[in-house]
Length: 214
Image (tube, rainbow, N blue to C red; front, top):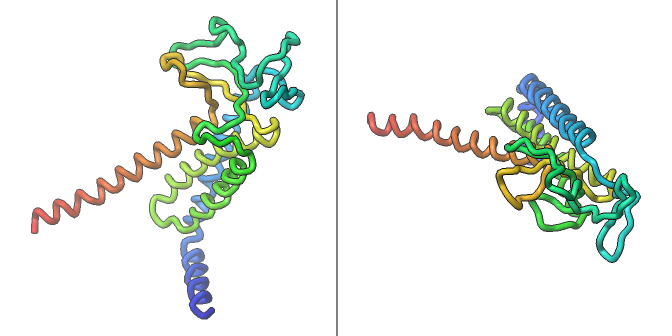
């Protein structure tokens, strides 16, 4: 009990001493989070064209939706069905498909998926309190990743466990369709790995040089 009190006192003391840096970190985090979340949601609203999954009909385990022309199709089928009607800018393309799973996981268990997203939304922002070095970059990248996580989580809550996928890469065949939220998650993780790796390299160089001098 006494040890717990000491740890808590030490924690609150450090927070008090670093309150300005913590405030800056959360401002950067919230700015990054709001901007990237808005980018994801606006892009889906403007570019996605498909039937409504909330008004869809299950036939067996497959969900069918009604298109604008009255035709019933699988929710997880690409619209337009004709590749000639896809928007193709050579390096990036636009087409629409509902996705009931997760780009990075095989499971379709919505409770698990949403629960995992909520855990990340709680733990990652709290971790900023303990960041003493490089807190600005960490705050920005956490905002980026959680914006993507939240974008897809919002979709699943609103659209019967599905997310709106709208982007494909024409130069990579049969690689599926994704959305801005997926790209934000991947980019955030990639940048974090690159940054962490580069920092570890910079830390090693001075020590190596000093060793040679000695």
